[in-house]
Image 1 (cartoon, rainbow, N blue to C red):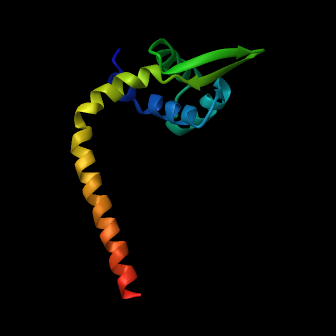
Image 2 (cartoon, one colour):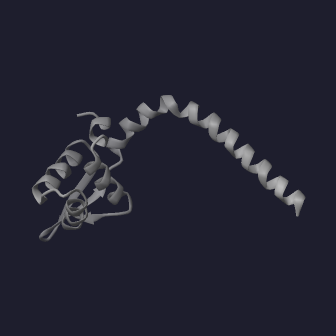
Image 3 (cartoon, one colour):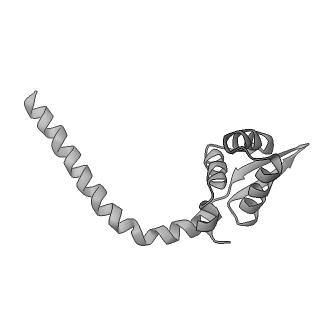
Length: 111
């Protein structure tokens, strides 16, 4: 399964968004995702397995708990694909930065 296939699923994106803020127990992930998407614990576990097997998440066992963390390896493939579009955004963001600076300068002159 490719990185974009994995990221194309809203449940998996939500799990990754949560892991981007720090480690989470499987239980906390299930509580968040199952309630938000109305899916079972087993379905959340399947999404976690896909993320683990494809390099998006790591898991470690702490006693009876499984603690998940973000693994950036899976995100590198998506980042590499997005690279071809960065030039499009870079020029527009540079132009926006210039417009913002001009607006700030114009407000200072009026004061």
